[in-house]
View (cartoon, rainbow, N blue to C red):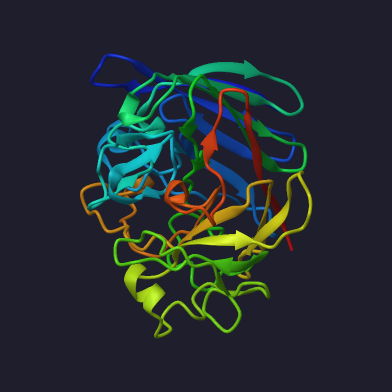
Amino acid sequence: MGIKKEWFGVLPSGEEVYAYTLCNASAMQVKILNYGGVIVQIKVPDRYGCVSDVVGGYDCLDSYVRGDGYQGALIGRFGNRIAKGSFELNGKEYKLFVNNGVNHLHGGEYGFNAKIWEVTEQDGEEPSVKLHLLSPDGEEGYPGNLEVTVTYTLTVQNGLSIHYVATTDQATPVNLTNHTYFNLRGYASGSIHSQELWLDADRYLPTDETLIPTGELRNVKNTPFDFQTSKAIGKDIYTDCEDLTLAGGYDHCMVFADRGSENPVKRAELYDPERGRVMEMFTDQPCVQLYSANFLNNAEFPFKGGYAQVPQTFLCLETQCMPDSIHHTNFTNCVLMPDEVYDYTTEYRFSVK
């Protein structure tokens, strides 16, 4: 049990980056950077007692700075896409940085994934690191000074809890998430197609060719997006379906069924039949972006140990509100007001069977 702090590298700005490794009594380890709040490593045992790292990422800081894919990072001020990089709020138009075709993605040019966060350590039976950041008014085009605290806690139940809290002095869109890539067989073990996924989601958001939601909330029944009964991720991924074709696989917002609870509830379970690892996801967010890592193909930035980037060798489960919700009155509200507190929790809990 405990927290180990290690030097990880130096940014071009001269700022130093450190890694914080959280350990519990069950041989689970989580390594987190103060740069971008990146989850570098999650080590958990399989049914045979073998411990492996089950998340993607890089060996060196330079790859996290220059590489793509937002590996393991905290995402903000707004996770996912905002159409055309602009929105109107309280009668004023705001222009954001466009970094994904014609759209704004994951907070812009230098989102929260590219920031040095202030870290406070809390050792104990459930060690945690509290990351703090102030995003000033006008950063990346957003209004208001946004104060953000994200707490990573390694629980006695082999869970990684991520607690997001934010406040603002002006109305502003906020959608915080984490972009960790999971492969329960181990990060260098190939396709995730045989791993099985259950999602408590009864609707999903179809998109246009730029992956902006059309505005429709479509029932998952009789579609490849129905994971209400657990199935292999690859079972329907090559189905002749326009939504899958546009994204090259799964890259869609899945809308959770209404359970009438304000507390985190179980919304997903990922299972690897080969090694027996299970990851349950508990959250109080209304949606999750299901992403089958369709765009991982950058040969310049191999993963840890020199493992090549290959599409669909990881799965992301990014809890959040609906993408581009600032433009859709029928979507989840994403505007944080000065008298409100943004307060959400997601936990990824590991076990075996």
